[in-house]
Length: 225
Image (cartoon, rainbow, N blue to C red; front, top):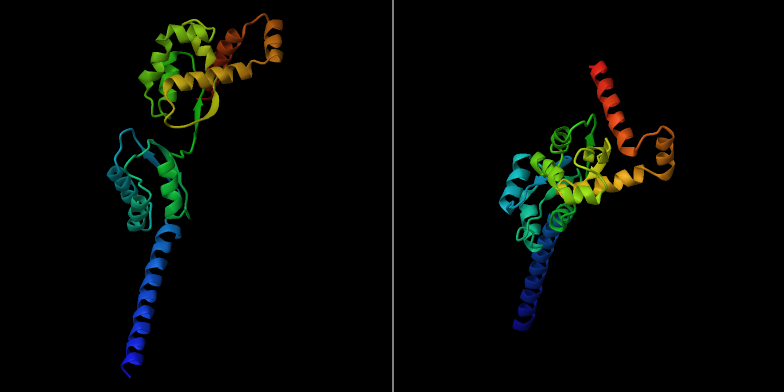
C-alpha cells in the first residue's frame, strides 16, 4: 500500500508544479505581449541619458500601464546597458516587447522640420534649432565652414540659398553637418535641368531665384500679419 501512496504524492507534486509553472508562464507572457502603452507618447532620450532617466520620464508622463513589466523585459533584453539617444514615438496599444525593441534598437521616429521666410543664417539657425537636438549655434557654425561651402559650390554670401524653405523629414539626432549634406541633396534635386533652364530664360541663377523667392515669401507673410 505504501507504493501507491507515494505514487499519489508524486502525481500531486507534479500537478502542483505544472500549475505553478503555468501560472508563472502566463504572467511572463503578459509581461512581454500584453498592451502596455496608455496613449501615444513621444519620448525624447537625450545624449548620455541613463536608464533611470528613461523610466523616470515614462513614469512622470504615465506612459505605461505596467512599469514592472517594462523593467523585467528591459532586463532580459539588456536594455539599459546602452541607452540610445533619440526621439521615439510610443503608440497606444504597443506591448512591452515592442517598446523595448524600439528603444533598444534606436528605432527613432522622424519628425517634420519646417522653415520658411529664411533671409539670414540667424533665421535658419533659429528655426531649425527648434526641431533638432543640435542647437542653433551648431547650425550657425556651418556658415564658417568655408571648405564645405566651397565644396557645395556656394560662397559665404550665397550659402543660405542652398537651404530651400519647405518641410523635410529628419531624425531628431541629426547633427548639423548631416543636416547641411541633406539640404545640399535637396537643393540639387530641386534644381533639375528643366528648372535651371527656366531660370536662365529669366536671366537669373538658381541662387538668385531662391533669394528672390524668400523675399517675396517674407513680404507676403508681413501683409497677412
